[in-house]
Amino acid sequence: MMKRVYLCILLQLFLVSIFAQQNCRKSVRPVKNVIFMVSDGTSTSLLSIARWFQYYNGGTNSGSDKLNIDPYLCGLVNTYCSNAPVPDSAPAMSAYMTGIPAQKGNISVYPQVDALQDIYPTDPAMALRPAATVMEAAKIEKGKATGVAVTCEFPHATPAACASHYYDRGKYEYIAPQMAYNNLDVVFGGGYDEVTAGMKDYFAKTGVKYIKGDIDAFRSFSGDEKVWALFSPSRMPYDIDREAMYPSLAEMTGKAIARLDKAQEGFFLMVEGSRVDMAAHSNDPIGAITEFLAFDKAVGVALDYAKKNGETAVVVLADHGTADMNFGSEKFKGSSAKGLDSVFFNVSKYKLTAEGLEKVLLKTKPEAIKPTFNKYTGIDLSEDEVNQLLSSKNYKASDYTQIASSVNMVSTIAKIMVSRTYFDFISGRHTGEDVFLAAYHPQGDIPLGLRSNVEINKYLCDLVGLEKSLAELSSELYARHTDVFNGYDYKIAKENDNIVLTVKKGKTTMKIPAFTSVGYLNGKPFNLGSVAVYIDKNEQFYLPAHLTETMEMLN
Image: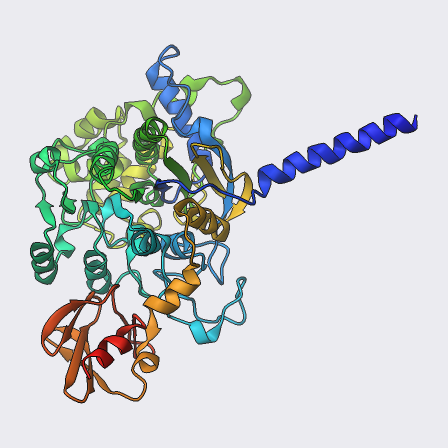
């Protein structure tokens, strides 16, 4: 009897040990290349919906019953702000990149104290200071090439958090130049309206190939130089609405990998399915489904490369949920006795998103609204629905996050689409559920179970093989100008539409324009080593601590 009890105890200890090893890996073996993939605003329920949609439309013998991501799903992520459990993309991605949960709208900066609501410990002395990102560290410490491939405009929150710093995600005029001056090797996506003359001049001086709205030039590119290819003035079209002039996210991912693969020290690539979130905000069922499937195709491209390459890890997750789309609406009574046809027959006839259909209807004469709507959706509109569309057709929502809760044509189209399905959305806003996590590592070192956004950052740092903490790097790259130049004469003033820090000592004058990585010593340009960030809230420049030595060498 005692022997059996002893054996049971040993077995329990063995199982506990195995479980602990799986969930608390002490050692993650670094890899040469890291591909970090984010499906923006993706509630976990969308994976089930997209998988069933793919299966329904692909046939039972096509292998369409699985997503590319499925074999690598390994856990969930608890993603949050420093002072709120429901994040937006800016602090959510900032936490993945820096290991520091931030506040709403923050792009890779330390949060300010919110004493009544903080759920993450904050240091008031660190408030608003730029926090070094794992992508910056991969380039600076490990010499890796870096890049982003997205379907939004390139300074949008998720890509911005990789290589720029500011407390307000909407300040593209401060974020866009930082991404240029941070010397990313690849930038693919939308947003060529945000490329300034100064950025173009910097591209020309540093040998960056800039491709604007030219898919042929993009496809024919095979060089070794850094490359920016932007295909739209702002965000790119939804995948189902996409015309031939726009590449898919999968194509951009493959092209980015092909260029970055040439880097001797490896690379760090971030890929975002940016517009899943935007479709969910609009409560657009076909938009959300097809955007996620387009993202999953990009995941397939990354995984195929990683498995062949043997030195690449792929991490796939969402930054937060949005709208929590599901197919359990009140209309879906007797659901356990209903087949796939009931759920997916109607939505499978939708040929455009609500946004794509709006563009068509705005050019359509009133008498042609009904047949045109039917052509793209299979829906026979009622007279009341036609009147709703006509009365809202000139209304434009300026904020995509408010589309579902405002009276506009896109929301009207989406509501009509949803009304012919058994899908439902709990809101048009972000939601606070844990999000999916998937990972591939050539030697199996993957994170399991429930992880926090901070733990994901630690995992990324381990994959890159960083020897210095991001906190140490932050103190080196983003020191306060009042500390760096203590005892010097300095002033901050606006010059040529930019904010410039001027420092003087003896015969030496240093000028540092904000949001660039180029300084001027007695009029001659030099590389700062990282971008200089100006925060107007505390009137501080944040810049490399070594600049004191640079000044002293000339005195």
